[in-house]
Each structure stands twice: as C-alpha cells, then as structure tokens.
Image (cartoon, rainbow over the protein chains, first blue to last red):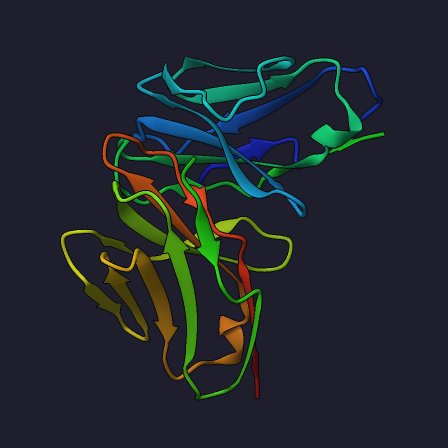
Length: 114
Length: 112
C-alpha cells in the first residue's frame, strides 16, 4: 500500500499561469478530499468526491479553482491564473467511504506562485 | 460557519510526563472528532478519533475525551516520548458531511 500519492511534490509558477495538481487515492477508497494548508489560514477544506461524483465543493474559491475525478484512480485540482495568495501546501486525502471514518493524507504539493 | 478552536498553540513537556491538548467546537451537530499528527515537512498522520456516541476512547498511550455539553474534546498523551514531538491538529465533522474542520494546531515539544 503506497498510500495517497500526490504529484508534483513542489511546483513553482509565475503569476497568471495555470497549475494542475494530481492525486492518486489509496486503491479501494471511494472518497477523495482536497485541503489547503497555509500559515495564516491553517488547514482548509476545499472539496470532496465520493465514487467520483462531486459531493461538496463549499470550500473552493468560486473563480479559478476547479477539481475533477475522471476515474477512481486519480483526481486533479486545477488553478487558473494563479495568484501569489494561492501559494500553499495542497493536501489530498482518501477514505474508504465518505463518512465519519479516517482520512488518509498524502504528503502534499507545495505550490509557490511568484 | 462551523469552527474548531485549539487552545494551546505550543506545549512543552518533559519526557515521561503527560500532555493535554484541548479543542472546542461550535456546531452542535458535530459528531466525529479525529486527531492528526504532522511532523516537520510531512503530511498529516491519523492518530486517534472519537465519535459522539462515546465520551472516552483509549489507544495505548493516547486518550481522547469528549464533553458534548461543553462542546469540548481533548487529547491526552501519557508517558510522552521525544518522538511524540510534532504539531497536533484536532478536527470535527458532522453527520452527513465528511469534510473535516480543523483547529489551528498545537506544537508539542517533548524534551528528554
């Protein structure tokens, strides 16, 4: 069991460029979550999928951010026209089911927007 | 919106002593309370959780207490060891929603 895999581990983009972050959940897990971690805001929920369907995107900034889960083996978080305030560690997690159960976190992708 | 507050931003204890980290939450519908540990430069690692149908849970040196009336829960680490040093996050979620609302984190330092 390789755990949740996130790629790339580090990404540096220029202001206004697009960034795509990838997540491979643990095999057999039906729920995938995205969170963002910054020093100022702490850990913030962004969005989650269950059985590939979007369930709750209440934490997603309405503009520029989008997430997809085209198949059960990966999810992507895309940020268009990146801004310096998007700089953060983006964490992906998966769980066996989308309920009150342990979420397994990946190592995160550190995004730096210059 | 729902908030989770973690009362201690830092905590220092001597090896062998107990450490207690306290959290409060605002949403009375919250029913699941996990704790995560984050070591420097690493992701979040699950340590223990408690559900609202019980008020105490223990796993080896870790004890979680839940006081639903006070909307408060706490993590007790007994017989601390230097490898317990990390940032600990409490979180809460409510029935029907899997998203976790996290506290601000407590940096625990265990000195030998």
